[in-house]
Amino acid sequence: AQSVTQLDSQVPVFEEAPVELRCNYSSSVSVYLFWYVQYPNQGLQLLLKYLSGSTLVKGINGFEAEFNKSQTSFHLRKPSVHISDTAEYFCAVSPSQGAQKLVFGQGTRLTINP
Amino acid sequence: DAGITQSPRHKVTETGTPVTLRCHQTENHRYMYWYRQDPGHGLRLIHYSYGVKDTDKGEVSDGYSVSRSKTEDFLLTLESATSSQTSVYFCAINPGQGGTYEQYFGPGTRLTVT
Image 1 (tube, one colour):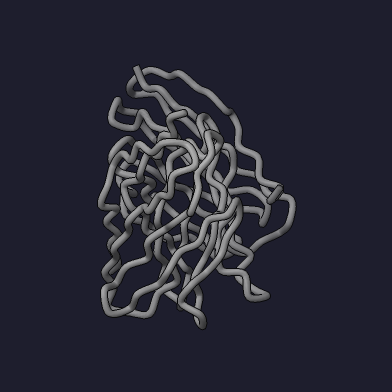
Image 2: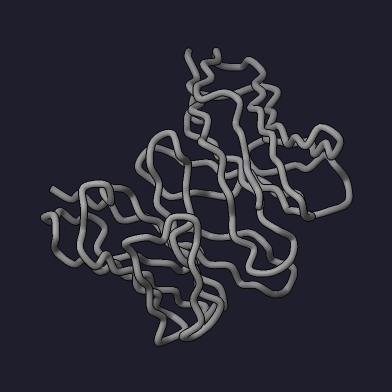
């Protein structure tokens, strides 16, 4: 079985500042890793994914994440945030084989202050 | 746009009544999933389907049943709704082929059980 822990439930940041949202996972099998974003009153949108290869992955809207196998982490970063980045962010894992059922973290609410 | 619609988008029902939520996709993807979203829990998998009439349980399946008689439709039924099933329900699809491993989500159904 897999589990995901997002270490911060809320992260307030000033506009144009850098941000890091932390995600740790556990799994006994090989996994794929994802970050999703949910804007207010909307569904989930894929930000980026790690399947294999380079441990630094780039996604939409200037976000990137780094896979660290030894620390079982997949932290999300952005060098300079905008008001429009205000949303809830979810880290998720799925087994690399089979039905690829997603296991989500609890979510991190990112609030950008002017 | 992943071509996923959910109906209804909002529903209020009374404890003890049956409720059916519908997920419809236009792309004939193999895998379909039902999740529920609750504050502090992220999204949790209820049931999933890997083909017509092929379904399996997820993490929080008690009190829910599903059916898939056509590739494009995946129905979630609350057999006797309880207040603990008040939640936002999301349907997702995964093409399951062509190197696509991420899931795409519908807009959600907000269900309130009074």
